Amino acid sequence: MATRLTETMTEVVAQRFRLLGEPMRLRILQLLEDGEMPVNEIVENLKSSQPNISKHLQALCQGGLIDRRREGLNIFYSIADPMVFKLCDLVCNSATEQTRARLAEMDATPATGRKVRRSVRS
Image (cartoon, rainbow, N blue to C red; front, side, top):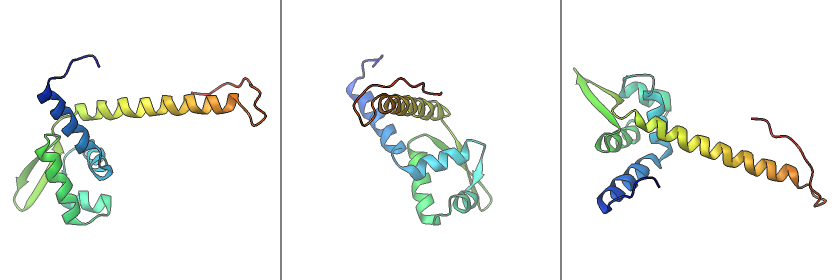
């Protein structure tokens, strides 16, 4: 790691990763990447129950990843920390590279045990 984490920062980072460890929360963040959205549209887009979505929205708000605002009877949600998308990109890029390396390794060793040279497309 580039930065040595204090005990407090270690807990903050762990909390952020726990928030992002739930697939439904990642789906919510992905929906909100295009802009603010009312809760009923989030529920409709994700085809989940209102209580389930509300639970995840609450966690994301408390974790500082999204904001909410009330307009009349509607509550609108938006991204509060766009850095979360850079983190997701880093994880996706790393996973892609690891998968490519594993595929290249599998391509290089056929069932006969002999090494074969093949190119791996990017």
